Image 1 (tube, rainbow, N blue to C red):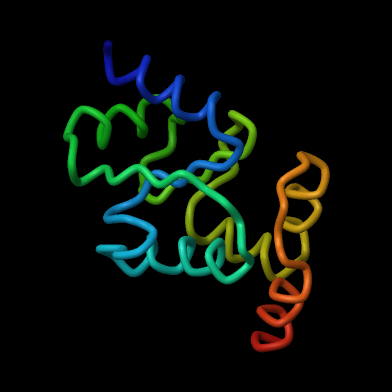
Image 2 (tube, rainbow, N blue to C red; image 1 turned 90 degrees about the vertical axis):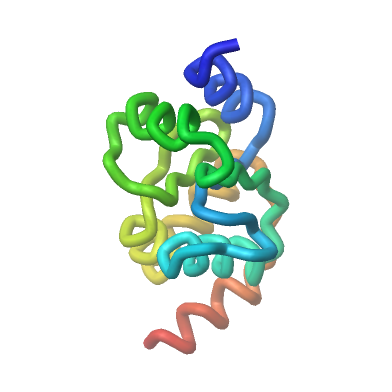
Length: 119
């Protein structure tokens, strides 16, 4: 199976996927840590893919999304964005809306606490 096929299968069989450096329990870069931290804090059930474990996936995800950086968040098979976009969406409430519209369970109170802490 090619890297592109693996990526497509991963993003279509999981509601929420984070391609990141490291894992959700042990991120290995600050940007990956920030996005994983937001998702973990909000109680989102997500699949994590450690791009450092597979060079083909590391380059393949950049080609797949036409996005040059890691991390990359996918919801219901659609590319959402990287660290800056996810941070902005979290603070604006757009991420809550995206999760709600796609039937992704998350802790609304935790999301509100993130916004309060960054107000």
